Image 1 (cartoon, rainbow, N blue to C red):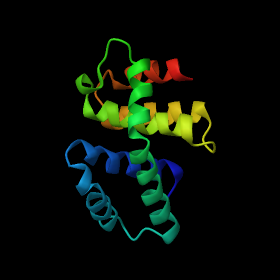
Image 2 (cartoon, one colour):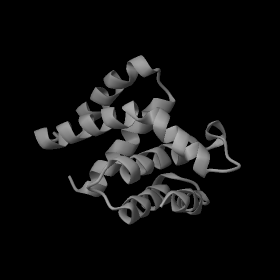
Image 3 (cartoon, rainbow, N blue to C red):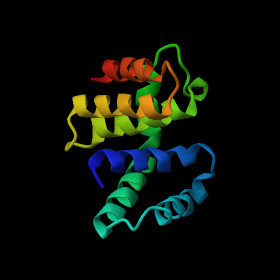
Image 4 (spheres, helix red, strand yellow):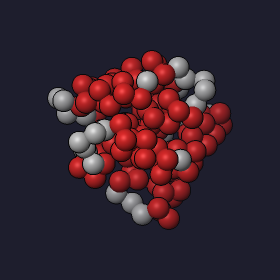
Length: 131
């Protein structure tokens, strides 16, 4: 898988968080990965480790987002936009291997695929405040 495909899978895995209890997330992650076309061991490790890392930092990520998204409470944001923002903030603040500009660009690309008409500009605006 390419890094973009891995990021897209990570988004789809994280999106499940909005619909399941915290104690169900590991099971949901395993279920999602089991539906992929035979991920390599490296891909499986990347997805599971990244998923856990993001979930473990979620409170901190949400605090960062709350401060950056003035006028928008997290519970009022669309679930797709919120999930994309969480993934991007993790990459911007906690992943030294991904340049900030790349994290923002990839988040905007995800918003074009999964979000609404206003999602790309909203995502870009919020993340630009954090750059």
